[in-house]
Length: 139
Image (cartoon, rainbow, N blue to C red; front, side, top):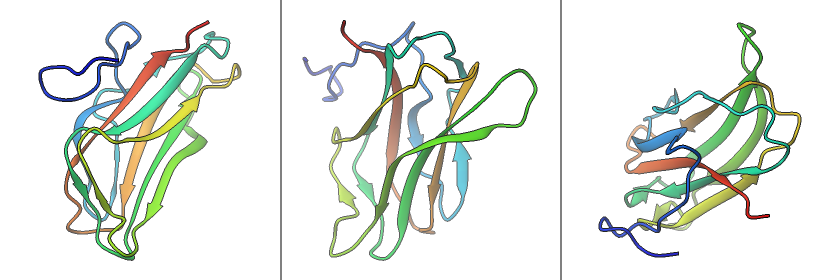
């Protein structure tokens, strides 16, 4: 894949949609992705979700960063689908460079209609931005 003008690797997205696009990390709380939800049912396992650092990220040692996906049908409450990334920083592992891919998760064929991302940190000084992008799997 080639690099875009901003230095990030180009990712072919579904209709240009995102679950989160350059979203600032929440500080010691949770936040829904700033671009979702998207409608993802009926994809028959042909879609994956990619999590990457849009800018450099810092999470203090002993603090955590978690990204999960939730889904629902209609007006039902969202339910957890999967935790797709989890880090409890130790010995400096919470310093992540811009562009680093953190996770890839293939959506199951049973995913419900609406899909959203939820980003959580336990760090009141968490810094950086994430992208959470749906992408077609090559077949």
